[in-house]
Length: 100
Image (cartoon, rainbow, N blue to C red):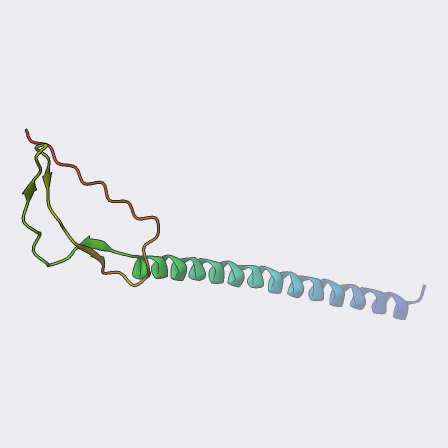
């Protein structure tokens, strides 16, 4: 093997090593950017959910007059509405009153 062949082989090895290291560095940077994008997308998703959530609350309408049933049960009307930006799903109202 001649000196010229050896120089060419070493040069090719150095170039290949440099290309490998550059490709590896680009891969690491691409992964870092992908992770940063995923994190940013998750934050945006959480903010969207918090901002768009339904908020169910009583309206400013005065409650109706309480009616006392013959059974002794007290009944009155109250009104509530969704002040949020999206419809509320699977809403349950569980009114409870205890006289202590």
